[in-house]
Image (cartoon, rainbow, N blue to C red):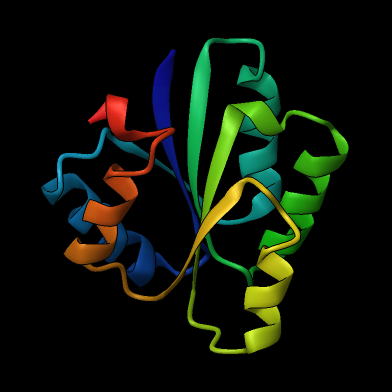
Amino acid sequence: MTLEILLVDDDPVGQYLHNNILTKCDFPKQLLFENGALALDYILEKKDEDILFLIFLDINMPVMNGWELLEALHKMSITAIYKVVILTSSIDSSDRGKADDYPQVFKFVEKPLSVTCIDAIKENTDLASYF
């Protein structure tokens, strides 16, 4: 199984910043998507391949937001092929609680990503073998 990193965020500055820090921390090349609909299309296109998707997901985006993407993936019962890090500027505690409703969300991070956070992600039992 291969690991693909999806960075789903409509903010080009955030994409640039997070792409650079992930690259510096030896993550595989990231694929960038500006909304959940584009990411969903990509995942559905590749879902039958031997891929684990690590999705860094912003909550607030146009077209399809992060919650809508999570709900679409949940309804399609393809939870085994993805893990999610919510990456947001939201400090609303209800967003953290809502993230707990999705078992594939294993981390909720306020922007920007830090090296410490990335190191913790690398140690996740489902992901450690990829680094």
